[in-house]
Every structure is written in C-alpha cells, then in structure tokens.
Amino acid sequence: MTETVPAPRVPATRFAVPGRIAVSERAASVWQTATLTGIRRETPHAATFRFAVPDWAGHLPGQHLMLRLTAPDGYVAQRHYSIASAPDDSGHLELTLDHVRDGEVSGWFHTTARPGDTIELRGPLSGFFAWPGDRPALLLGAGSGVVPLMSMVRHHRTRGLGVPLRMLVSARSPGELIYAGELGAETTAVFTRSAPAGVPVGRLAAEHVAPLVAERPPGGWEAYVCGSNGFAEHASRLLVEAGQPVERIRIERFG
Amino acid sequence: MNVTRGFTGRPRVTDPGLPPGQYDARDEWPVLSAEVTPGLTPADWSFRIDGLVERPHTWDWERARALPASEYEGDIHCVTGWSKFGVRFGGVALDTFLDVARPAAAATHAVAYSHTGYSTNLPLADLTGGRAWIAWEYGGEPLAPEHGGPARLLVPHLYFWKSAKWIAGITLLDHDEPGFWEGNGYHERGNPWEEQRYSGD
Ligand SMILES: Cc1cc2nc3c(=O)[nH]c(=O)nc-3n(C[C@H](O)[C@H](O)[C@H](O)COP(=O)(O)OP(=O)(O)OC[C@H]3O[C@@H](n4cnc5c(N)ncnc54)[C@H](O)[C@@H]3O)c2cc1C
Image (cartoon, rainbow over all chains, first blue to last red; front, top):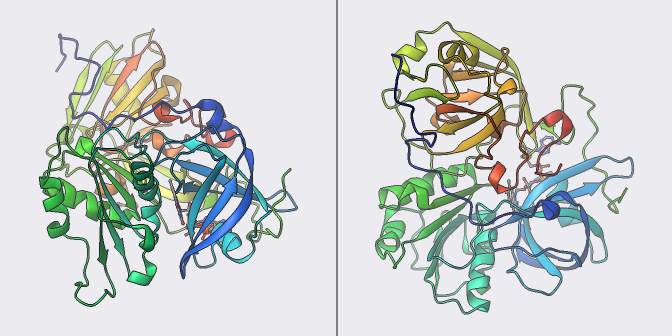
C-alpha cells in the first residue's frame, strides 16, 4: 500500500466554508467596559440591552462577542452573545437576550440590570458567520437565533443595499416573535404552537425553504442558519434538500 | 477587577478537574459545528496520513477498524465554556497510524482535515505519545453523526475544536498553518489549562 506519487496537501474533499473576514486579534483579546444605557422589551421572554462601548472596534452583521459578569469575590460568568445592532458609528451596540430559566447571566440581565450598570465584553469574534452585505443572503432563524440575522436585515436597510435578502423565522407564537414590529416584506414567519387567524401552525418545512432557494439570485444565496442545534440540523437539511450547496451554508448554533 | 452590581452568580464549585472559565455540562453535549452535518457512512469514510512522512497511507473503514483498539476515558473541554467529565471514547491511538506512515524528522506540525473540508492545526507533539485517537465509539455506542461519526479525531487535552469531526486525514508539515477556526480568530494551540481561547490569549 506504499504510494509513490505525493498527494496534494489540500484535502480532496469539498472545501469548508471559508471565513468571510479577518478578525482583529486585539479586539478579540481585550476586555472593554460597556455601560448599559437602555432596556427595550421585545417579547415576554426577551429584551434588548443597549450599551455604550466607546472603544468598540466596529463589527459586521452576524458577529458575536463574549460578555462577562464579575461577582464581588472575583467569580466570573462568561457567555457568548450575537450582536443585534447593525454596524454604525454611534459608539453603541445592542444585544437581545432570552430570559433562560435560572440562567446565571441572562437572569441577571432580566431581573437586576438597569441603565448605568457596567459589564465587560470582548470582540467582535468569529468572521465565519459575518455578512459584509456583498452576497445575496438567505437567513433562517429560530427563537433568539434571529438576533444575528436581524443585524443583517438592519444593515441591509440602513445602507439601502441592493443585493437580495430574505429571512425565514420560526417562533412559538406571534407574541414570542422577537422584533415582530420591525420585520418587513423580506421576512416570512413560521409559528410552531399558535398562529394568527389564517396562518397555519407548524414547523419550518420544505414548502417554506424550497421556493426561496429556487429563486437563485445572480451569484447564488449565501445561507445563514442560527438557533438551537435541533433547529440548525433541521433547517440546514431543508436547505441541502432544496439544492443549496453545503459550502454556501453557514451555521451558528447557540448550543 | 470590575465587579458587576448585584451579580452573585451560581454557588461556587471548586473542582480541580475544571480548567479556568469552564463549567460542568453534566449530561449535555452541545454541538457547535459551523457546517452542515454530512451524511457520511462508514463505506464513504477513509483516513489518510501524508505530507512529511516516509510512507503516505490511506485506511478505509475496515482496515482502520482492524488496528489494535484503544480507549480514552477522561474529560473533554469546549472553548465555548463547557467541559464533560469521565467520557469514554473507543477507537485507535493515532500513534498506531503514525507508526505506519513514519513521520519525517522535519515534521513539526500537522493539519487535520475533515470530509467536510473543516481543518485544524496542531503541533505534532500534541498528536503523539498516547494523547490522540481516531475515535468511532462514544460510551460504547457508535459515534453519532452530529458528534463527528463515523469517526473523529480526539485530542482531549486541547479545546475540542482541535478534535476534528468526520476526520479525513492528517498532513504533516515543517511549519504551523492555521486551520478553520484558527483563521477565524481562535488560538493556534488551544490549551484549556492556559485558557488559550482566542488568538492573542
Ligand atoms: C455564538 C453564540 C451566540 C449566542 N447569542 C445569543 C443571543 O443573541 N441571545 C441569547 O439570548 N442567547 C445567545 N446565546 C446563548 C447564550 O450564550 C447563553 O447560553 C444563554 O444566554 C444562557 O445563559 P445563562 O447564563 O442565562 O443560562 P445558564 O443556565 O446559566 O447557562 C446556559 C446553559 O449553559 C450551561 N451552563 C452555563 N454555566 C453553567 C454552570 N455554571 N453550571 C451549569 N450549567 C451551566 C447550562 O447547560 C445552561 O443550559 C448564544 C450562544 C452562542 C454560542
């Protein structure tokens, strides 16, 4: 079984989805203080937290950051959160947090935090799920998985970008749909437990995904999938079955 | 120290097995791959070692499974913060594969790559000496597809993104070359005990 011809170093397999942008090492490694400036309720279980971060290096839609809270004895809890706001030069950014039952970090935000409080964060992190606004974007999210996708939608709007952008979001009910008042014609919502009159209740399915994939805009869709692992597996399978190339599917799993 | 007003946090557990900043995920095993889980069967699977080796070699499923079995029982640590204690993986020690391929003296680093095209870089020293495996069993059962089945690389002393799922091969090099996450801002080595999460840590 000894081979004589040296094989190419590059795997002879379909290549992994390349990162979209380079990530600043400095921004990713330095903890910065952020001051909470406002809290906006989105749904009974989710709220948006706005922070002043004067030294923020800027981000692209889809990126996330790491946040930490410190107790008086030095104990630290750190979690990842997607950035909800579009990039701008306001010196502020927004996160949208689900209130997880007994959640250590989301619990503090939903029960204790108030404007003026300071926390620490580092980022932006990961260039993989970033969308610079260049390619047609097909966005699939569930629950708080809509957060990084909303940053893309907002970016698309505020910059008046011409590339096609479509979003499919899955929520339990209309009341649980984060950013409901902000969603426009680019978005189709799917409800899994209860829906408005005339809208069927059910899971995200081929009938939602296939027609969008079939639109195939020039250059092809870059698909972004975000949510729980269960949703990510389900939604990415629907995309593949509808003909979306696997190397044009980016997945962010919230664990 | 920048204390967060009103934050007390969970009751403290001082567990010497827990690297800094990690928590015990207990029964959970979160999935964090960035790509679509491939529909890879054992018949589609193969594993190759090449680059700076005397004898580049490819194993198919049958030939890999015929090698002497080896187990890892211990802990694993993910960069997102969870650790799992006392997990049991079954497979073959990577040393067994490397003994066949015979690394050249100039080989110092490796790129491990997956059937999906995912890749990750490691110093060769982290892959030898009984510290790395090709694993196809978890807890005595076949490794589930979303956890890298039919077979994944297992390098449990480093953060788990180094343990490439759906492992397809390892290429030995005389220099370090960033893999997928390393090119996306993650640390080149990823030692959980030194909390090497991001590049620059
Ligand atoms: C890339 C990324 C982006 C994310 N973006 C968002 C977002 O935009 N919005 C959002 O709401 N969420 C997001 N999340 C999820 C978020 O990071 C937290 O998991 C979530 O807020 C719950 O944290 P918590 O501290 O409130 O809950 P906890 O219950 O304290 O922790 C959440 C989970 O982590 C485990 N855990 C953590 N610490 C411990 C501990 N000490 N002991 C036991 N178990 C523990 C548990 O399994 C638990 O289910 C994102 C996650 C990732 C990976």
